[in-house]
Image 1 (cartoon, rainbow, N blue to C red):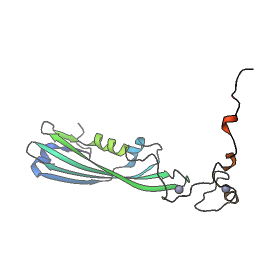
Image 2: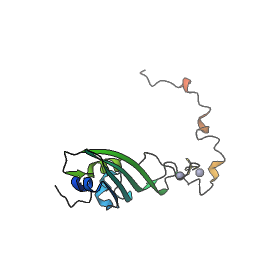
Image 3: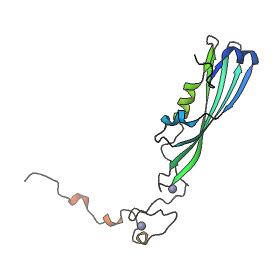
Image 4: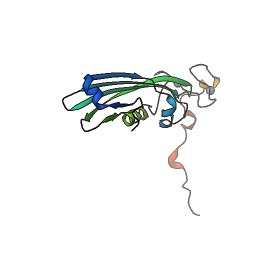
Length: 164
Ligand SMILES: [Zn+2]
Ligand SMILES: [Zn+2]
């Protein structure tokens, strides 16, 4: 067991002290594999608060990650922080408390599937592709709805692709 890992703690030490509060900013390289893109994780912050009970130690942890993502509507890059907390109880049968796994698990679940640069993001023009938060295009006017051009189409009259 690598006692020197900053995420591994000696059980007896915490028991003796009664509590331990740790604040860490580990190197992001060790966590980059948890994300879709290697460069997505910009910063990781950990808060580990241990408190000793009679025959167990409770860990309340908090993981915050600064992630570089792209807006799901307009595809502009954005950096935002996400965090989550967890609780773990360690029985007094262990010699070391290894927090690496729970931290990796929690970190890996931080990235949301979708993110918006703003709730009111207008997205991109479906015709010319410009970012509608920044520019106004000419095609906008002739677009009552994205599928306006198809409104007259009667689907039921379509011929089935069949044999002759
Ligand atoms: Zn956007
Ligand atoms: Zn346009």
